[in-house]
Length: 196
Image 1 (cartoon, rainbow, N blue to C red):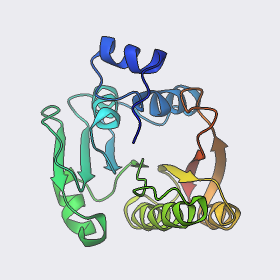
Image 2 (image 1 turned 180 degrees about the vertical axis):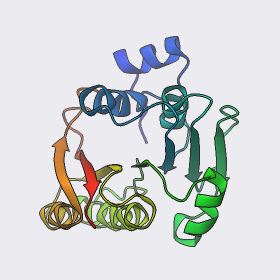
Image 3 (image 1 turned 120 degrees about the vertical axis):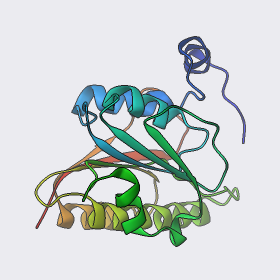
Image 4 (image 1 turned 30 degrees about the vertical axis):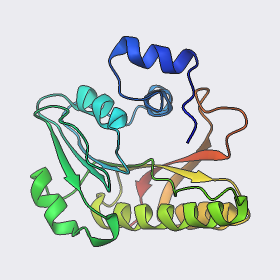
């Protein structure tokens, strides 16, 4: 995957973040305000860890971030638990126990498939990962509350996935951060208020 050495790349280096992708979360949080002090956050597809870094700073010492990825992630801080695992094999109850809570306040997903160059195939794989993330959100967020922020590649199945999110959450917004390259097919959904 080509590393983009642009303004955001250099800014991330200067600010001590591991990747430019942190600004895709920061922009959304600035707009929607879903990362708060003391929150419990699940970060799916967390490597190399910039989203978890940002979330850890926002939730503070009384909050907790559980970061899950197939790849190993270097230590981030005392309020971040790193879990190297395939998300399809992760037990929800173990995640809750690790968070020390009966629910998460926020579920984040920056998961993306290894791209093949075939947009249709890559889109379907992205939808599959987004569906898995949504399933975690439905199991782990509190009824009537919670936030789910998820990346997905644009394509023919996006409308159906967005509709499923609308069935599950009171509010669903589509968001394209400025830090996302113009040519990128990624789009983000910001969902809030899990329906009973």
